[in-house]
Length: 141
Length: 64
Image (tube, rainbow over all chains, first blue to last red; front, side, top):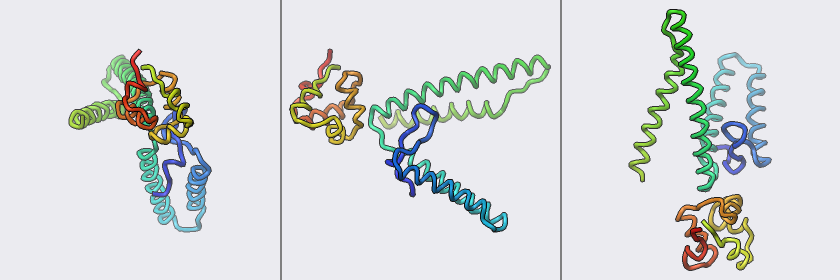
């Protein structure tokens, strides 16, 4: 892995993810952005450029996940994170449910039956993830 | 929960930062504990009691 979790801090007040906490963190982000622009400016054929961008994206994603998972948290941080994520989820669920209800009502008024499948899939995936998490947690402790 | 962390910490002459490092938490967590705003896990209470060189958890942590 390239980035170290201690270079960053968890984003608490402005969404999800992490933000640099040290100069190494800023250097890491800057290096990624520079690499992106360098690759897009390379005088190579389109296929190779795309391949390089895909490789950069994969490395970035794997590193991002590693940093997020390994970021140092104590038990109070974990409790705060769990509560704030739960509250955010409830807000998202409320908006999605209202959205589906609105879509169903509007489409019914027009004599059709339509709701956005992406919203339905998101809700279904949420149900599955919650079920799997609870099965895992029940077995664990 | 009522703690005597600050009392025993001052007695030992260590800072909040040093205690936090000893027990593996952030300084903010030690501040919250000292201000009785956070109830720690049994494991953390045990670690803090040990770091403050006390024999029993009840000497450091009490129930209001």
